[in-house]
Structure formats: structure tokens, C-alpha cells
Amino acid sequence: MSRAFRRIKSQDGRDLILTGSSTLTSTLLEHGLADEVVLLVDPVLLGTGKRIFAEGTPARAFELASTKALPSGIIINSYKAAGPLKKQP
Image (cartoon, rainbow, N blue to C red; front, side, top):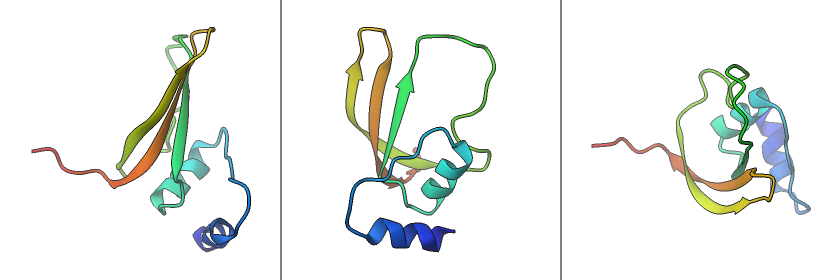
């Protein structure tokens, strides 16, 4: 599967956007195929729910690229991939 994604990613054209799939998102991150992660934070506490990333997703570092607060209270955070997670001293 990662070979097909690498081929698609190498082509010129518009950005590919993936929404709502923690399994596929985790696979793309694992293979270094996601350049950006956008997280929308809605100020609602549900108590339970699905994890953002699938169990076993390798640790990765991200750098905050932008953030925007909407009038509704939702915060949109955009993160750029920054490589493997560096060990903390």
C-alpha cells in the first residue's frame, strides 16, 4: 500500500486530504507519507471515544505551523512533520 501512496504523492497536482480515518492516517505517518496533520479541537468533553491515532503508531515529532480560533470555540491547529521523536534527556 505504501508504494501506491508514494507514487501518488510524487505526482504533480493538488494536495491530498484525508479525514476521519485513524487507521489510514497512522499508516501514512508510519511510512513518512503525511506532510501535515490538522487537528480540530472542539471544546466538548465526551468522556470516551476513538483514539486519534491507531494503537502502535510510531512516535513522531511535529512542529506547530499555524493555529486559528473560530468564533464557535473550535481551535484549528496545523502541524508539520518534523521526523522521529527525539529522546528527552
